[in-house]
Length: 109
Image (cartoon, rainbow, N blue to C red; front, side):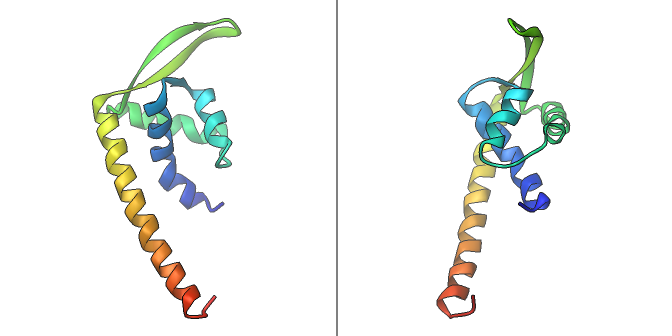
């Protein structure tokens, strides 16, 4: 998949995952990777930026498998932003689909 496509939707993916439940970084990478191929190093700069922008907070939780894990928890601003991004994404996809279908329907595939 085109890297620019990924960069544009990762923010929405992260916020959507955190809407469902609090997660730690590696867990986010694993869950997103089930649907979109991403490198672990891609997500951590994004997480830092989103935290700095106030979309979520972090807390540490002890782990049975090693050092404490840093969990990410969505804030109200994060919830609002996720909703806005989701609406933008839906409109974008609808627009692209109209163009693609129009092209296909006119025999220009």
